[in-house]
Length: 152
Image (tube, rainbow, N blue to C red; front, side):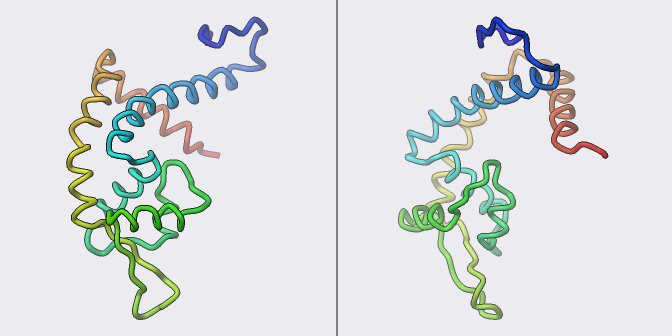
């Protein structure tokens, strides 16, 4: 198990092996995306925010809502949004009914960048996982979702 780690001592439990397998797999799969994103001068977190805002539509989302939807939590979401706004990829405005809330929206320029990344990212995912059958992909997805959401 986990040959690539070259560990001589056995792991403490099967759960530990599975946990490390998930981490290794996620890191390996992310490498391909990160390489594509680098060409657009975006970090994975910035790309994640842009996709979240694209999905939100014209209404946009508050910083809190963006943070809750992110794949990797970013403790400084404000600074992340500052960088995206400085590049013209998002816009922010205060909500008239509650001036404490700031809504973020993806700009046309942000949508243009995302549109240019959609196909290359889709191709990366396909190349990385094409050796798995449709049934295997569905089973893997179901198992990962089950692992994230235990029923206690």
